[in-house]
Amino acid sequence: MRILLIGNGAREHVIAKSIIESTKNPELYSFISAKNPGIVRISREFSIGDICNVSKVVSYAIDRRIDFAVVGPEAPLKAGISDELEANGISCIGPGGMAAQLETDKSFARNLMEKYRIEGVPQFGIFDSKRDAVNFIKNFNGDFVIKPAGLTGGKGVKILGEHLKDLNEAKNYIEEIFDECVGSIRKVVIEEKLIGEEFTIQAFVDGKNVIGMPMVQDHKRAYEGDTGPNTGGMGSYSDSGYILPFLRKDDYENGIRIMKKAVDAVKKETGISYKGFLYGQFMATKEGVKVIEFNSRLGDPEAMNVISILQTDFVEICNNIIDGNLKDNIKFDKKATVCKYLVPEGYPDNPKSNSEISIDEREIGKIGGHVYYASVKEENGKILTSSSRAIGVVGIADSIFEAEEIVENSMDFIKGDLFHRGDIGTRGLVQKRIEHMRELRGH
Image (tube, rainbow, N blue to C red; front, side, top):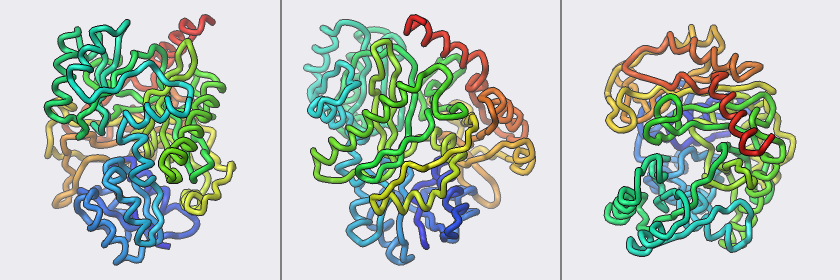
C-alpha cells in the first residue's frame, strides 16, 4: 500500500510516524514544501514543491501509483486538492473544497450553524463592507472579537480589550482586513467575546460517523501567563482519559454532538459528504459550550498530543474513513500528554530565521521525550529555522505534570536561538483553569 502525505510541519511528522508504524507495512511518500528532516527520514520518497499546486501534487500521486493521500494543513484543502485527487481515482483523507469551507470561510460556518439551528452559536454579524462592520461595533453591547473570514494561520483573530485597546483600533483593524484582503476574502465576522475556558475536540469523520479523540487545550499567546500576540499555538496538553481536569463529560458530549450536526449540515447544504479530520474549537462558558470555530484538519500542535497516544492502527482508520465504515472502537493510551513548541527568537512578530539548531534526539528519547520537526529545513546536514514554529516536544506520562516535566527536561538537549513557554502544563496554570471554571459555574 502506497500512502502520500501532503504537508511538512510537526503535525505532518506525527502523522507520518503513525503511518509507518502501521501493521499494514505501507510505503510512505511525502510531498513537502521544505526538507523536514523528521518526515524525510521515514519516507520512501519525497518531493519538495508547492503543496497548494494541485496539478503537481496530483501528477506526483498518479506517477507513484498512490493508493490514498492524507492532507495535513488547511491551505491545500482550500485549493481543492482532495477534489482533484478523488477525480483521478485516488482516495483522500481530507474534505473537498466545498466541505472544507467549515474552516476556510468563517462566514460559511456561522451561516450554516444558524440555518440548521446548531447550538453553540455566539452572537455574530457578517459584513462585506467596512462601513457596515464599523457601525456594528459602534452599537455592540459588550466586548467583541474581529475575525477575517478567510485563513490567517491562527493569527487573524483580535479581541477588544486584549489585542485592540479601543474602538478606534478595532475600526482600523476592520479597515486593514478589507484594504489588504486579509485571509484572501474581503469579509469580516464580528462576534461576542466568550468568557470561559477553551478546549479542542478532534475527530475522525467518514461522512456520517464522527469518532472523537481526547480533549486538548491549546495556548495561542506567545508568552507565559497567556500574554503577547496570538500565534499558531505555543503548546497544548491532554489528560489521561478524554476529559480535561477543569471540564466535564457533558462538555465533551456537547462538543461531539455539535460536530455531528455540523457534518450533517454540510451534506444537506452542499450535497458533499465530509470525510477526513474535523477539529472543533469550543469555549466552555457559564451558559454552556459555544463554538469558537471549526477546522477541517487535525490541529497543530493538538495532533501531537492525541496521535502520539493512538493505539488503533492509523492506516486502518484511514481505510475505514474511505469506505464510510468508521467503527466506534478507536483506542488511545490512558496517558496524559504535554506538547511545547520551540520557536525562533522574535517569533511571531520578528522571528530570527535561517538560524542553526541542534537536537540530541537520543538523549531526549532516553527520558521519554518525543521530537517532531515543524517549520525547519535541512541543508548540508544542518537544521535551520524558518520564520515559524521550529520544534514540537511531547511528553507522555500518567499525569499532565509528569508529562510536563519530561518536556522541560528534554529542552536541555535542544540548542539554538529558540524559546518556549515554560508554563504550559504546569500545576499553577492548570489550577488557574480549575479555579476559573469553578468560579464561572458557581461550584
